[in-house]
Length: 139
Image (cartoon, rainbow, N blue to C red; front, top):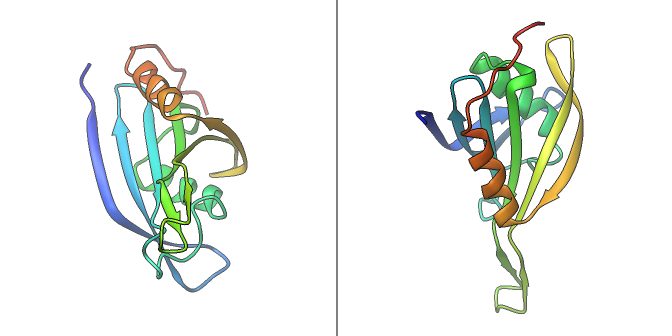
């Protein structure tokens, strides 16, 4: 199946309540009738600002509006890479994937809900999106 892959590394955004710039990495996969966005936290970037989890609704709304994505055909995954805490490999935090669903209200995505995925689950979810299906484009 054909799809378009857009990378923003880093993607900069401003939360509606703040005046500071936030950064994350985005991988946007545009399929025929659906779109998948993988937002990756830039934890090693001290100036990255708000986390992708805390800014999920506004970040998803910005991406949806910028790329004119239909909210019912938008799939969102948050990705936190594996990291070591303490600088001396004292503690290793595993890689985390979460599927995030939103309620569409007006022209915004609101009320994020998180569902944990392991790496295999995230890949299976991405692969399933590649299967063609019809999506209603009603408002």
